[in-house]
Length: 321
Ligand code: HEM
Image (cartoon, rainbow, N blue to C red; front, side, top):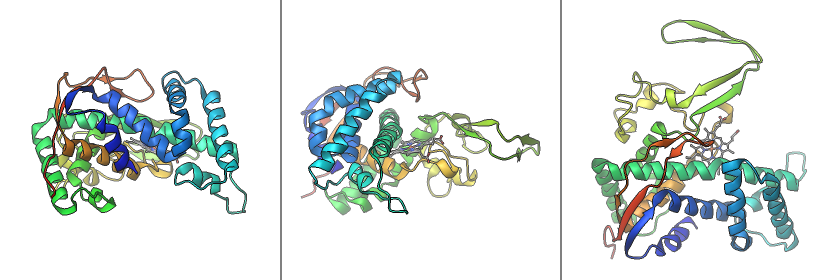
């Protein structure tokens, strides 16, 4: 489904031109997230209004009621025409609790908004940073292209789940972009029972029940005793023989958080971003035309500041016939 979406979306680019990568990926991720979560016919009808409301929610924290009302309408419509679709909305509508109770409209709508909120913007930002780093770093770009050539030789144009699982180089490029730019730079937890923390220097701290503790992801992912040369974009640090995050311990790498409330969309997020970037690398010669973006800290998630201007020329990386 996502592969068809990519072909359809990037067909509008034509043979060559210049785009703001951040804007393009924002639109694309909205379409993919909407299609996978909410479904095709209804989605096509309401897409413009939905995008406006969702962006208002992200940027200004408003419009939650209008967005919920719109989604409740969709749930009712879906139930009324009694047709089974292949999307997350359908799964949530059909879900039952262990005591046999069905999900309510409010629960279905609440979960859909949470998934959109948790998954869409984070994936847009991460795919934009990954692209900016790849296009600014010739060595990484060459390795990523080489990997795509190998995958094309093995799988041709028919990318399935196994093919994406074999894209280790691209995986590490995304993982490293997330280490340097975690979309949620901190997360917090309420302490339910007293506990003691011991630092690596042997100091002990008593943490009291009732307090709120904060984990600075940005800081944790840049500790020089875990990540060698933490300011350098170096995807190989996750590869065989180094695996700096694993060597660093259980919570050394936390862009997807950790513990009971860690991200449940991690695997899907990697799959989605790999699908986008493998498509772009195979089908376009890309060049970063603007300066490497600074980070903007003004929104709920940290993201590239300003436009990320990229020129493109259509190509076929390797002929498959
Ligand atoms: C690069 C992409 C993503 C990043 C960096 C990311 C990051 C995170 C982080 C840091 C948390 C935990 C927040 C906390 O501990 O307070 C989280 C939770 C969550 N994420 Fe993601 N996420 C991504 C993509 C997705 C996607 C694609 C989905 C689903 C479609 C998703 C669904 C969720 C949900 C439902 C939670 C809440 C889990 C819970 O509270 O038990 N995320 N994510």
